[in-house]
Image (tube, rainbow, N blue to C red; front, top):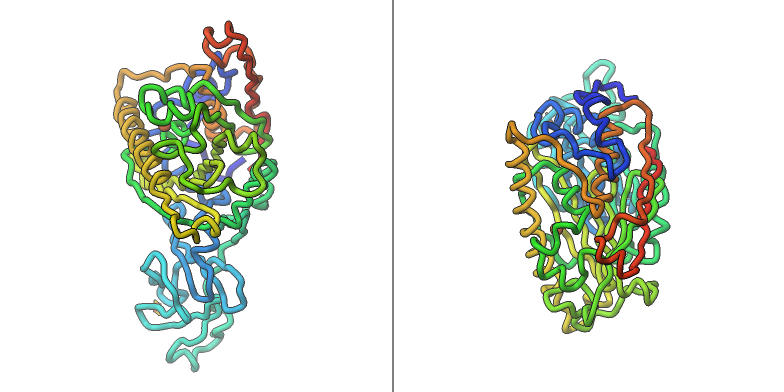
Length: 416
Ligand code: FES
Ligand SMILES: [Fe+2]
């Protein structure tokens, strides 16, 4: 139970928490109501482990990045001792912001107001004209630390540790993706988008390909919307894969890898699949045979989000003279923009006084999995929703008649 009081009652989300073939979608006000947004920021984003970047963003001593979580600025910096640390971006004197550039390199941090200076490990080094103060010690006025942990090259921080470690939050996800060795990958491209949609609209959109034939004809040619399967999950994540068909070897403008070898450690099966994972609350991982794409979804307000999309490749591949990621980047940039358009349409349509929550199509059970994470947290009643797998109902009738059986197993429990 959270100390904060949820503005959405268990009764209001009861219809979401039914089996997927009986459930209704989230109540529309959760996409628009500023009070709901504030609660999510405080109760969820401030108290979860949230991915803020990659280790390579702070690779050398003094390199740092800034993140904003639930409205709070956090500095992530590599110390001279090689340690990554995180601090609140607040001077201990009169509380000025310490750093304003989103990324950079510093020997130490100097406050722009009265020039108190802090070491990279957070210790206060110099504060002019404080020598004669009574009961004042530099040692007591270091930067305020924020908990930080790293998984597979991804930096996570949490503003208010709840006693849940990052591995508690990730639960059984790492085992599903360890062979991709994401720690070894490096970013080739990054594109930021501002989307006129609530962050949950974007996570829901990512979680299904029911919309793919109409919205993404290019994507649907490479991985048809109805060929895939979801994974069983024991935590606050949902995921599955889709199958590459025909000559397609990856997701790119022409389906070709353009000489990029598969990531080491992948099985022949992996080389014919794209894996998609939603990690609570806001990291989306898309694992391709030859690269990994990530989305961080940052809520700006109830109606807007900033999405940071990055493309990660193996450094040996990036070192090749002919390396050019634009076929992968252009493909997903197009796909992203196709998605943002329908997300914005949903954002606008769900404002209508006439809209009542619709029903999940059975291909949208991963949307349901995400919405259950949301609904359980609104309800805040300690109940963890479980799915019953719907082996029989996911595919269209035509597919079932053709005997192409599949099984879908959705999250059964979670922590964090
Ligand atoms: S507020 Fe930072 S030195 Fe005064
Ligand atoms: Fe999409």
